[in-house]
Amino acid sequence: MDFPGGKVMFTSQMSFIAEPGKTRVPCYRVLNDSGELISGKDHDLVNQDLATRMYNSMITLQVMDTFLYEAQRQGRISFYMTSFGEEAINVASAAALSSEDIIFAQYREPGALLWRGFTLQDFTNQCFGNKADCGKGRQMPNHYGSSKHNYFTISSPIATQLPQAAGAAYSLKMDKKDACVVAYMGDGCTSEGDFHAGLNFAAVMEVPIVFICRNNGYAISTPISDQFRSDGVVVKGQAYGIRSIRVDGNDALAVYEVVQTAREMAISEQRPILVEALTYRVGHHSTSDDSTKYRSTDEIEHWKIEKSPVTKFRRWIERNGWWNEDDESEIRKKVKKEILQAIQVAEKLEKPPVSEMFTDVYDEPTKDLVEQEILLRESIKKHPKDYPSDVAECI
Image 1 (tube, rainbow, N blue to C red):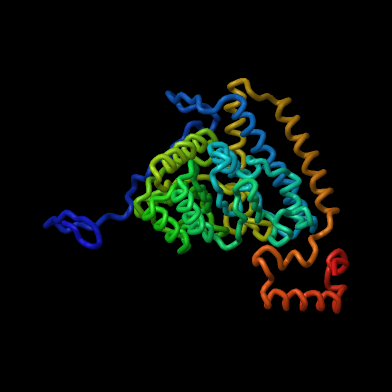
Image 2: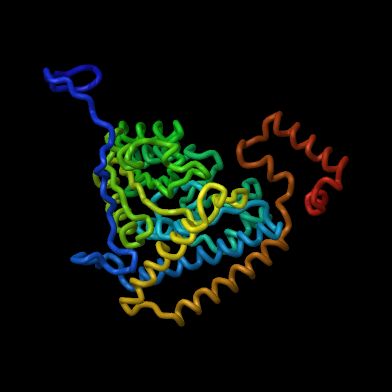
């Protein structure tokens, strides 16, 4: 029978939908922890060129994170977040996309932007907030954005990107574009109202979007056991009528295959897809966090060494004869040199002029913005010692 709330079939037996049982939704993987193909699994989606490029990007991301994290510890930048342990999700998912696909990232997906051609100099310019930063120094470090690379600027409040991403996907649908939106999030996002609003809008309006959730077990210091009782995140898609899958986020081949397939379905069938990628955040949440306060060092070391997605993928390409120790040493040495040079350049560049704080939003500055700029300039003139010399010199 048709009700305003939906079609139903009547029954005389009272039955409640049960809570999750002991049987959980399975997790798709292609490689085991030793980097070997699962028995009986044939995988030819990734050739040598693509595989080595993916691995190069994962290594580059690792090295960049290491040196920019240390730059923050030395007081050279104000803040930083690493992607240690989540390199496969970053790079493999981006490799499965088209450059025309629009990315709405959270703050732990720099690898996706790296894959699209954002350079180490671009990353360091943003972290140092200098005049070469395409964000004009307005964002805190790690909050990257690039219209050139179809990568929307990241915002700090979690999950706010999800309704925006659903809206962008609706615009692609209306324009009949052969592309989709990809919206990244962490498991903490699923505890926010914007998560539910974004998924519901995407499902109802049938838009081409792939939601990728990095379920790494912790929303900063809050474990998933304190966030939700459901079987992870994958089942939440089903509740909204969204086709969903769970994948091993530490398996680059599995992530690549799942995201590539999800993208094809999203575009060809004009539907949202939810991907839950199970992984582990090896690093602290950010430079403002000490994760040993809420998890043991043994746990961290286990995932860092035994479950590393980078190590797993390297073992696979080594077995194929596509990589060796000399290649490893060469790429790490090369990237180390490049990132150190990029930091030196970024650190020496001037900050953007004060006027850049008040441009771009409106065609003509509003009365409030004009007043704010006047007050700021007066404050800098009055208290020059409270501002960096390069800022005071811009007045």
